[in-house]
Image (cartoon, rainbow, N blue to C red; front, top):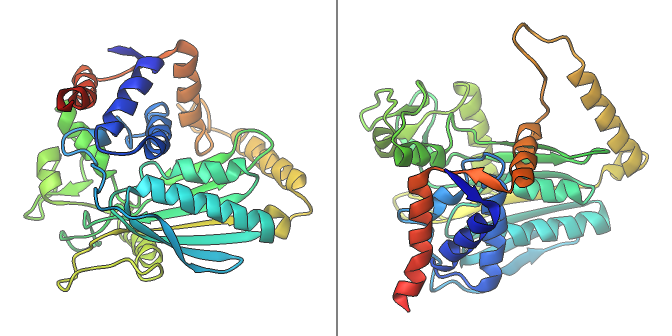
Length: 333
């Protein structure tokens, strides 16, 4: 069904607020969820349905526990991951603008960070090269195993150009966790070869996959990349586990680089990247390929199309469920 952007924004704001977030945090989370929804990214309003992502009533203030001119370590105080990484991104940009480079790690956030391409794009929009990665709870198996051990361990890179930034955002898993949730909510199957059931059998049933484990994309190569992200978002930032080794929090890493550390200046770097993209898009195409797309280009086009139309196509049940979550605030009153 078609839903106006205005109605979607209002319903999403209410659904976030219903999870117990204050107004400032609600605004941050809203922008990141809508960034995903309006670009066809599955880190969207589905995150607010079902069990949702309720605010931790015992969350403390976000604070910096280690700080240098180039780096910082943030204690998230068990706040929502999007809010914590937003602060980390702001700090990384600030340090890179002042000193050429900024790296910020976070620990002790209580939930996932959503579409981390949002943060990478924010860094690129500031004229910097950005890298963001996030580690989550045990969802994905190592190559050769069917036991969930890694998170989906996404990484994103943002690069400024003379036009729109390059934004590369991917999970190291063969399918995003919320992609499976979305398929389950919409009664659809997931693709072949992306998940195991709890007995280690390959499955296309999203419910069985939710009880089992996701595969790494690209076999051992994707699993190796997931391991690297795990290192950067757990031991490096001091993310914590219980005595049995079970993860208790989410860890994240953000860094920003000023291109002028190496390039003559920002403008020449941006021009060089834009020239490279032009050359890539002019490459000879295989049969059936209408256009070669740069990372982030598909999502930008979806965004431009839905914003021009003023409305977006949304599954009717998801839309009803989203409104119901927001209406629960009125019911509680």
